[in-house]
Amino acid sequence: MYKRVFETGKALRSAPLTVRFARLAPERTRVGFIIRKRSGNAPLRNAIRRVLRQCFFEALPSLSEGTWVVFDVPERASRFNRTEMRAQAKQLLAAIAEGK
Image 1 (cartoon, rainbow, N blue to C red):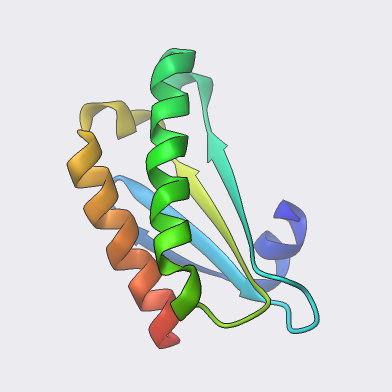
Image 2 (image 1 turned 120 degrees about the vertical axis):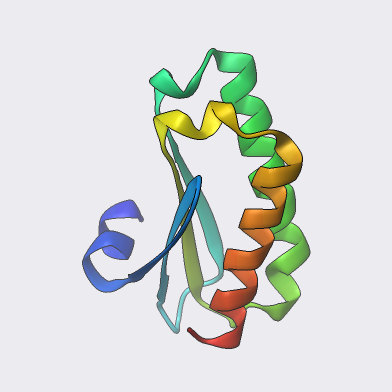
């Protein structure tokens, strides 16, 4: 999944996130996460993943069928709180839904 998104998709960036996405028509909509170990300990990485997954599920009705989304979380993401992370994720997912 990740390889196909990186090869054929586009990237949107907004601190602290990068969202890569590709529209693969016959497929169903999917989400993936790249969270590096240097981002923090396992509970922190899991909390980040839960926040991003929830944002994805909220945006799912507005995404076109067959959109694959990969959240790329950098090491510096641990400096941002969940509210900031959620706001950035929602903004990026809205841009994907609008077709940017």
